Amino acid sequence: MAKVKIKMYATIREKFKEGEVELDAETVIDAIRKLVEKYPILKNEVLDENDSLKNDYIYLVNGRNVEFLQKGNTSLKDGDKISIFPPVAGG
Image 1 (cartoon, rainbow, N blue to C red):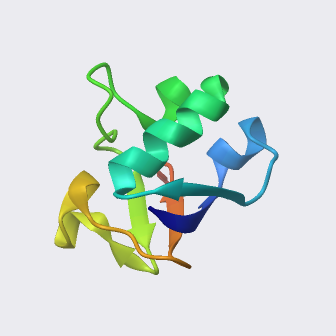
Image 2: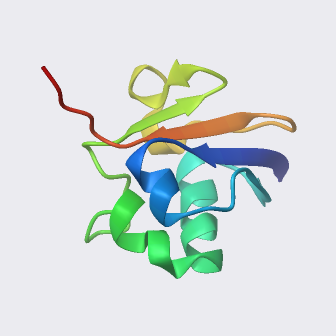
């Protein structure tokens, strides 16, 4: 297991005021599920009805989008940082 940090941004941060959360996880989906287990208020924010990553959110590991890695199965190592961004619209 790797010790990683998770940080949320924008509107999701308004609901979750913890800042960074540190936890142990092997993959991105493992980390997000553990985050939701610890903070149930986030369940419908970051996971879909199948407990998978919500497609409309952006999940980064050390600044790299998991869509271009192995998505939720992206392996983690000690010191990795996961950033979660909700959908943003504007114009």
